[in-house]
Image (tube, rainbow, N blue to C red; front, side):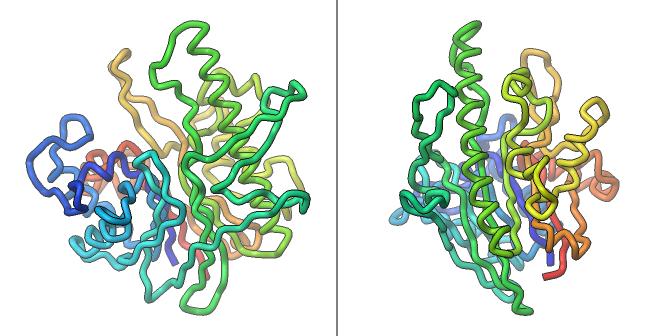
Length: 341
């Protein structure tokens, strides 16, 4: 079975306010591209992926009356005749960037199954609520929330294997141009603190599933990775290390080979899942942001991971049409895992 995660930049820009697909020459929300160019590129990428399930990050905005996310994504799947043609979402959010799961109903049965404890039981709270944590280590409790609550899925394969997935889109650490100098530094530190707090919250939920003996995939955009900013040293470790349980007992760790490669060789060439243009330097910047982390039992089945990078993956590079489609469709590239379920 193939499961993938894909952050699609401005997917909502390819639908009108009634949820209808926009296939025309008007400008896409992606700079310098038309909506038709981005739409056709996405169709080519999704067909090439041919996944049984895709966790879509930055899925189209959900409005249950005018443009429900499942209706839009299922129309997209039908347009390009994808096997993954049914859509599941969890908690909608206010950011116009939903987390949604597009899947093949003949291969997977999936349900939105949020977990969460109540005060005093020692379990992590539900992701659509709030968590209290001392972010500044000053003895004062701060309240944090997810602006994009993770999508928790209970899944069952066609062969009857039950497992769980958590789709995530962690808070960005960037200050998006707000402030400069000392003010920009303050915002960056505050954003990283909140991002790490979200990772601690997610890690607590991961531990609950691992200790219950449940097969688990955590997949999506963590907006973090080794060496991405100068504030990482200030906090000692990245959010990726926290979620994986990098230095915890082996039976309580998640595994992703690309994360391990990036974390284990910080001075060497590292894998990348995203490519951004920096106008100030007129160059592209690559980053490792998207992951598929698996529990020890799923790792034991010897799965195969792949980053669909247009330049780093030889098969993608040799296919000129796919290579161009990957560059046009989004500023992120898909990550997939083939595993036995």
